[in-house]
Amino acid sequence: MRVVLLVLLILAAKVQAADPHSFSNFALVSHPTLALDLTADFDKQQLHGFVELELDWHHPDVRELILDSRDLSIKKVMGQSAAGKWLQLSYSFGEKSPTHGQALRIEFPSQLPKVRVYYHTSPQASGLQWLTKEQTSEKQHPFMYSQSQSIHARSWIPLQDTPAVRLNFQARIQTPKQLLAVMGADNSANVDKDGDYFFRMPQAIPSYLIALAIGDLEFKAMSERTGVYAEKVWLDKAVAEFSDTEQMMQVASAMYGDYPWGRYDLLILPASFPFGGMENPRLSFITPTVIAGDKSLVSLIAHELAHSWSGNLVTNGSWHELWLNEGFTNYVENRIMEQVFGPERALLERQLSVQDLENDLDQLDAKDTLLVTDYTGRDPDEAFTQVPYVKGMLFLQFLEQRVGRAVFDPFLKNYFQTFAFQSMDTEKFLRYLRKTLLTDPDIVSMGEILEWLYQPGLASTFVAPQSDAFKQVDQQRVLWQQSGTLTDLQTNSWSIHHWLHFIGQLAATVDTAQLQQLDQGFGLSQSQNAEVATAWFKVALAKNYSQALPALEQFLIRVGRRKFVVPLYQQLSQNPQHLEWAKAVYQRARAGYHPLTQSAVDKLLKL
Image 1 (cartoon, one colour):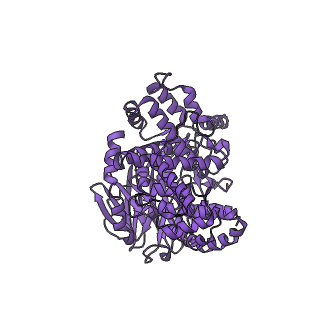
Image 2: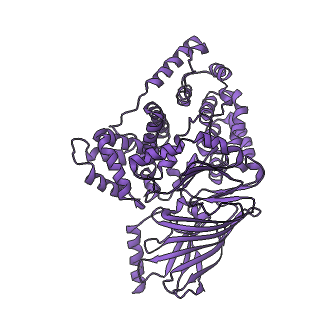
Image 3: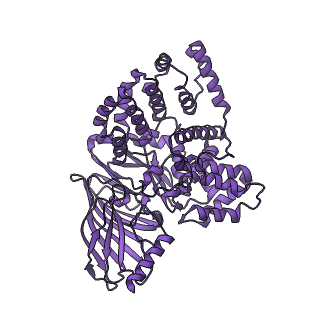
């Protein structure tokens, strides 16, 4: 009878709280509190120690805890009784999945309040990158950082690795004494480099936001509640570049409610970091590729800050519904940029985002262009296309345009407050939408809403943003192509956004001689702005402009951000003339790439 009850419980749990990307039985037992005690061994490229989980049992018949893991070596598992005695527990691993790792099953004699798992990580842990001192900017000491999104926390902590579960944590991290450890948590206890660091995150967060970095880091404040951690060579540059962070916080707080996390600091990572930024609460991880010297790429800071409300505070309950994180965040980011830098810049950035989305829509399967997409049986990292980011933003802008900002802003502020520190799904959002915003079907209909969410491509109600500034750039491009005279391009007043639009229109209309003229006149192959350089290299590859290859080689070796290098390798792999060259460059660059970047490029080059 008990076996039947357990089967029914498991089936009910799957219905109530299904996450196909987690093995864990979080609907039956969960861990609202986590404690880490880890030591960083740079020689072995391992973290070793234990994690302690405080358990919340949801049914009296359950005697098993199932955690997510990937390539972890377990030494032992101990359970603590109510009397405080530690007992050794039996455990086993489930079948190994190439994308999801494997289940760690722990058997309990009774429902104990705590469990400790003693373990060490693999040097190939997908959520960690270990860099030698030669791979850092200062080249004096090694560096390590984590990247837990989407399901990579399980590669360095055995836990319930699903955004449906929230937890608070504390941690002790031991390192070589010359290095500083920082986490996405309260870092205030660590004022000196002594190799023994303590952290606390009192607010409940999903597992993908647990973050750790260790390196030769310095700190400099930007305001009373903002600052920068970085290697010394980047510190002053980053402080100057991101000096508007406090103003961004004030603007966002005025629109969407008080900033809920205390401090907001930035950590500048080595150039191998695979993303633009990662929104770890209290300490966003940031790529140095956005330090352009002119604040032209600081929308990324607005984006990671916006996650403090959308994503970190109200979280997608599964990776099928990433738009609930990223669509809201792109919307809030654009509103922040409008308030701080003006409506014209926000419009330009919005139009460039639509161009990026349209490129993705041309390449993706129709089923992957829905806002709510089923990624069951697939790697959830595949969800991170422009669809949840930009199409999600456009959907919210559609709502704003229909009801007006005077109505939409209070709606969104109340949404963040109502569902703070909760996981969200689309159906729950729709129920809230019907109850609070869709009071007049003549203004916006449910059919229009459902088209945005559940139909492929762009909705029929989509209205493309249009900038007169970009129209002027197009007119100048046509004049230059007709005359062949560079002086017809009046670029003195162009921002990075104008350049990105200009370069983005070149592939369909220019030849290699014209590319050479542009390169000689403006030095585009040598651009120090990574966004401009990537856009230019894409055109150069499309047109077989071989003079750009030496600069492209240095770029691919220097930069590891997936947004840049993966599309470039993809183009190279599709041209037989460039494939062997690309493989040779990749062999030189690969060691400096994050495991996520390595995996993507390995597939492209069929290595």
